[in-house]
Amino acid sequence: SIYQVITDRFATSDLSTPVCDAGDMKYCGGTWTGIQAKLDYIQGMGFDAIWISPVVENTADGYHGYWAKNLYNMNEHFGSADDLKALVQACHERDMWVMVDVVGNHVGPQNGDKNDFSAYSPFNQAEHFHPFCEIVQTDWDSMNQYNIEHCRLADLPDLNQDQEFVRSTLKKWIQQLVAEYGFDGIRIDTVPEVSKDFWADFVSA
Image (tube, rainbow, N blue to C red):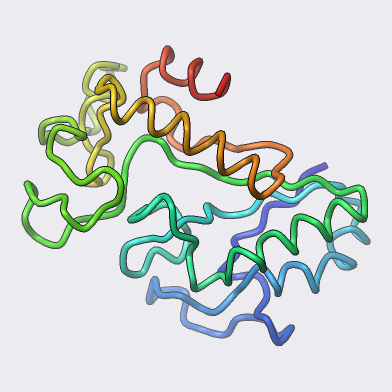
């Protein structure tokens, strides 16, 4: 059975529970070291796997992990790369698995200019994204799959997985991420918003 952990909201490195106003939508201080220290608690409830928040560097206030800024940097609010590796190793020593949440549909919100992608890495060119449009409720109601796959969810820049650099980079990235940190599985966010053929390539990577 799998225990989902919102990394920022679970446990701090000093073993305290994060204290903040959740309504502020800001970081509260939870870390990978904090999760590691609570493995007795999680395993004691009968769980043999954990599902952690996305681990990459996020844009401002991306405490949840779903607003990627740089795929190749870890989210320093959660700890260091070594902290993450230590968490995975500690779980494996207990015969527990670790599933990491990943996002291949979008990046974090922009600051104003809808045509400026320079803050992101490695997807920092307009050609890496679909032209601007937004998913609206009628798209969901009518299952307008074209708009769902090509427009922005919650105004988040929508990656163009048909663009060769985007497609190949995402595939290489997930392969390297799993190999480097020893994750046992991945949970993929925003699946309906990306074409099925891309996901087939992604999971086979």
